[in-house]
Amino acid sequence: MGLLTEGTPLSWEETKKLASHVREHGIKQFINIYKKLKERKGDVLKWGDEIEYIIVKFEHEKQEAKVSLRAVEMLEVLNEAEIQNPNTVKFLWRPEFAAYMIEGTPGKPYGGTLAHFNVVESNMRNRREEASELLKENECLMTLTSFPRLGCPNFTVPPSQPTPNEGGTKSLFFPDAAVFPGHPRFMNLVRNIRKRRGEHVAINLPVFRDKNTKIPVDDSHRIRKAALPDCVYLDAMGFGMGCCCLQLTFQACNIDEARILYDQLTPLCPIMLAFSAASPIHRGFLTDIDCRWNIISGSVDCRTEEERGLKPLKENKFVIKKSRYDSIDSYLSPQGEKYNDIPILYNEEDYRKLRDNGIDHLLAQHIAHLFIRDTVSLFSEKINQNDEEDTDHFENIQSTNWQTMRFKPPPPHSTIGWRVEFRPCEVQVTDFENAAIVCFVVLLTRVILSYQLNFLIPISKVDENIQNAQKRNALKDQKFWFRKDITTDVSPPEANQCCKGTKCETTECDLIGLMTVNEIINGKQGEFPGLIPLINSYLNGMDVDADTHCTIQQYLKFIQKRASGEIHTTASFIRDFVTNHPNYKQDSVVSDEINYDLLTTLKDIEHGEKSCPELLGYSATSKTRENIPHALKNDF
Ligand code: GLU
Ligand code: MG
Image 1 (tube, rainbow, N blue to C red):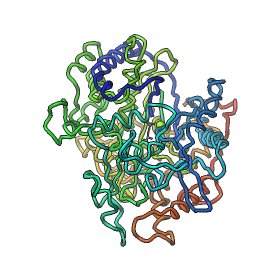
Image 2 (image 1 turned 60 degrees about the vertical axis):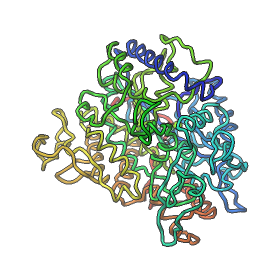
Image 3 (image 1 turned 45 degrees about the vertical axis):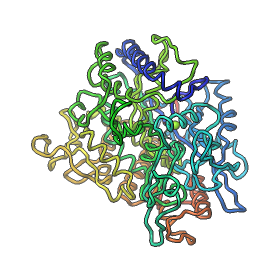
Image 4 (image 1 turned 135 degrees about the vertical axis):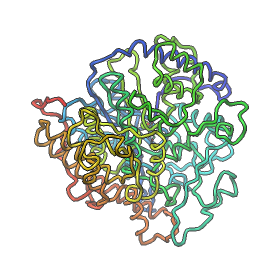
């Protein structure tokens, strides 16, 4: 979830006083990084995935499933191996926001050979197994984007109670005990976000209105004025940051390529969010949304009333449109500049400093814009820093701007280059699905770079898409703004299908149009080539071993089927399961019993004990293997 600094957290009052200190030094630190590393070239493609897991405990005798608050205990053991052998461990394990979550990545990034696609799933599987060895009886490590009954009475093991009038969270539903206790960062963020905002965070999810759905859904609106009666009201950071996702990081060959990737992947974020939708149930209710995005956005929304435009500006400088967790506000590459069509706020002084130090307009405005956010977490040991060497103040702000994409400079004194992170995807139930999404997105980056494709659309349209992507059944029902002509002068003929097969001049056809996820991914005859056909034509020109070829084809087939609506998204599968459950009362309530049956089914699907063609398709198996055979060293 971000940088973990050791030390003693400062109180909110102390942290607040140091906001401009962090800003000043954070900007200086970025300038120093930039000066040292802007010319860095020749890095090779490396990439990796991050998966967040929930530890679930099944109580079979009661037919209940709960979250197990054992992340600290498990991480102590999991991290032991890394401490002993940092360079040879197969997986890296990190804490996440909740006491029931852990995060795992491959021990080393993958490289630039196609054969790496064939080890992703195996790595995910072994990763899950390594952590699963530490599970107690009836526990299971599940890749669930949201735990359906999070915040319901007794949803944790050991049992814990919310404390509305004391502690850090002060939630009606989410106990402090469910926040990861092994590092002070997490509770510190909870407290400081609430204090900065001046009240509880407030998320109101429209309930899914079924025949017998009760409105008001519960009594929340009687207790809290922020709660809307026809919505599922959530009042704690844990409801958002306690959700899990699948993220990807790419190393580019230099800063310019990183800026291109950052921009080109941005319009794909809403598409992949809709594609990976996996979280329709919150606090025990079916809702009218399928994704976690706005929930996390609201769960860390530290903007004051002034900043939210509810009061005239007095103490604060800006009315800010978005939370610090949201879709990005500006493109970074020269090609992207003309699509930056929403106002980008920043402190003139920060922007000037960056410009005066040789940083171009687009990058300067990006960094200055990140720094309109105050620090919400500061440790006493880290206040005074050597700006030539340290980067904590920069990272402090950078890593608490949780956006769809993240542009990452090389860490100091490391062999790592300029990177971008792709952050929208919800995590899927099985390793097969997660590996398929990872390989699809990585292949897209290769296609974008080698065919020099252009996916850019105005950033305001990306924002619209992000909102539409979260609606119930968005993959089937919504249309998304997408660029019709994705070719540039050097694109190959396959990409040139806009305007009935002739090379498209943007003056002759409208630049963008509304398309379904199916049309974007699978293509539309004579109008849009489709992402999968582009990947396939890219792969046709590549040498690849038979097993890897087979695995990639299985993944692409699965992506095609899900995009076309032939198989369910995780969210629509979950909805279907609930609404068809014999004990569902058509009242939008996901009871303990339905939750137990749902999670048992998802667990069995993940373990391969239950086949589920309606979610995975009929042939969801790959030839994944643990290692890349020695002979396969062909580069992309
Ligand atoms: N769990 C968060 C999500 O679902 C991401 C936290 C992180 O940045 O690692 O988006
Ligand atoms: Mg994480």
